[in-house]
Length: 99
Image (cartoon, rainbow, N blue to C red):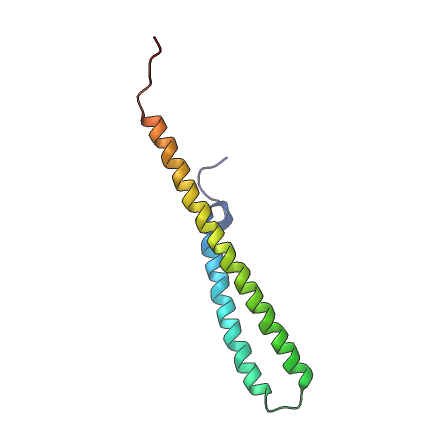
């Protein structure tokens, strides 16, 4: 097994960065949907407006899930640092002799 990440998902940091990129794309998508809703407001197409509202709802739900995922990844990163620091301290501690 390699110590170096092969894909963006081989590390917590890579996954966290990917989540941030997805959140940026969702923000852009939400702005686009708002623009489309404003443009559709003057048209008689109720079905299109309903579909746009559904897309808006689904994007908001996905955004919430990604924010939650981002916080979880951040927690995991913090815990990993804590655990690795404890291991380093244990490795650096002088060995006790029983005797």
